Length: 500
Ligand code: AMP
Ligand code: MG
Image 1 (tube, rainbow, N blue to C red):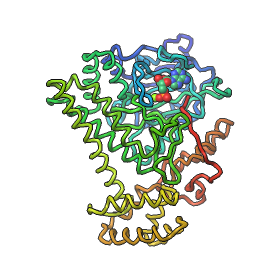
Image 2: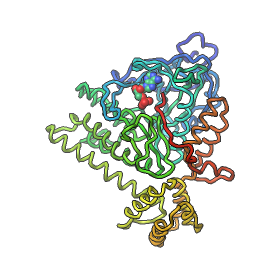
Image 3: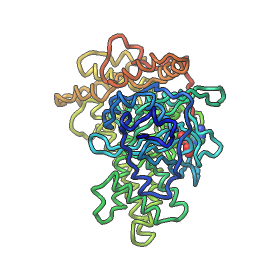
Image 4: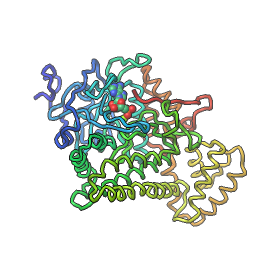
């Protein structure tokens, strides 16, 4: 039995060898929201990364999928039996300006798998070749940005932050033409879904309310099935997206993550982090930090992320207005109330997580000021965000470590006094919780660049070492001190680029 459309592959690839049971709910429920597309054949596909634990979660037999046939299949040029690969259509606001048609220009949705917990997960390829949405692009991806997505996805997952993750990275054996010739690769990305705010904007911009309703119904049944039968389900859907996104952005902020390109086409409905392009972790705390080379106005600076997420939610709400019932005025009033909730939900999530980072229990009126005064100190003295909180954990455990991070002692000494007093009635669990929410290791910019440069030159050892550490980011490991520090000053200024 052949699994693909290519009869030449009949002997090499059999269904028994690759028992991947793709489902196609998106293709079957959302006609018009995609174009059926197959990827290009990679000349020499081979795995350079394979996520064994994610494969197991997806119910895949890693030993079987990690084969030559698997690499061919997951690089995009073959249509697996039962699959209906497609390029998804979406629009989006990019840096505030609206593009009515973006879509998967170098990606395709291979199909969906039901994971071992019963959840539906998309298997999506990035860099698999041109699609009807490619515009001037070549549809390809370079190895470096693909590995970058692998690293960041694994790290975010290990922090407990909702994220897309890489099932695999496949080197194609092809050269892609960027400023230099670069080795090409395909990222095999897994997500709860690839529905974006921009997916809603696509038909909303055409005034096609029936299609928007169809998409909302699909999104609700896939992500918020508890809302399917209720009245007011579209308003409650908007509320659920607000809840998920506000919680997500709070988590980003508290690990010092900067997404870099929070366009509406890069914001999911599921509440997962998606599209790791020019993203980076902040070393020294500064709310104005921007790394992306194209973000010249600082629109997506670290400190702007909650406001930008809220702005994106407002764009989602606009698409849903015709579904909310009542007069337009009434619909706007109801949607606005939900958008406004973003701020309070975010603030509450942020403070709750900040309390855990500070090792304090319960809620007291002075907590927000305690947190904000600390951030002002970190900013004033350019203190490394990740190292500070880990040092604070050591401090709470009885080792005086925090003062060594500061050149000027006065401010931090006074703050530590307030913090110690606030911790007096802390529960016993507050200390181990501090260790579980304040990572030792984050994907440090210089280490990410070092690992990628080595891999592109053929040495994958630093990449694997980094991934290994980031999989257990809360456990300090002997001999890996270097990985816990920020980049030397000489590394900056640092610029990141969209993964094209
Ligand atoms: P991104 O910056 O990855 O979020 O992509 C923004 C838009 O540009 C999406 O529609 C992508 O599909 C498209 N795009 C990015 N890179 C390429 C490429 N190399 N070829 C074709 N389309 C691309
Ligand atoms: Mg994108």
